[in-house]
Image (cartoon, rainbow, N blue to C red; front, side, top):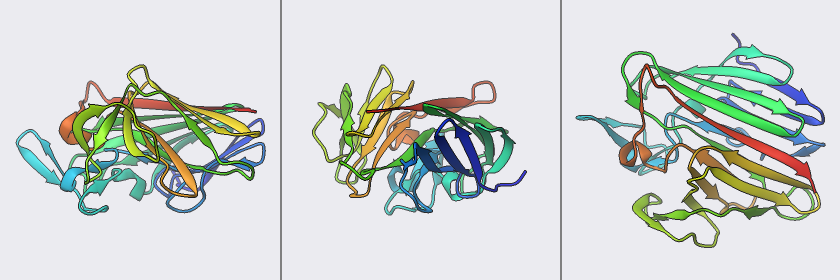
Length: 262
């Protein structure tokens, strides 16, 4: 099917899905407020088949070492699916199903399916990775760019992680878990009971990012936006905590953003 833009509506919420630009959510308007930073690189893009950085762009699968393009030298970052055009499988007024077939430079054939469901007070994203031949390691995550300011006060970020992955000078986890430190952050945190982060734009909107997954990266070092990124493993996870996707056990993850006026 085509990969033209898709508009979903529910109540006073409107989401724009852009399959042709990496399967991203290009916009989310609630009561006339645009919550996502606008632009070709922004919105909310899927991180798949890996999340964050891979050290030196290399990961091992058994005895084989694979090299990914260094799109954030000296590392590879955020997967390959955000750089491709996805296909639209099914659309209704408030739900879209889009797919992406993994191709070079990723060395294994597989299919990614993303379901975007909009309700009056929430947006739910569900993604799966299914191999088409052999098994392979993979991760799933989302990288939303929430606008820091919606025209009133800057957003407040509130969450209570169990630990922070210590970040080395190369921006990758060292393998040590430390007590959470104050921001600004470009850091991965562990939330073993599931991701639960609250964004509050005072006097306007509260939005909760939740997911059954246990890792979240929070990035708030840019002036224009704040990123809250649920994911199935930490950065460089293909090397440190690989999750093997098999024909019998595909990898699936979900996140929900729920909002209310304040």
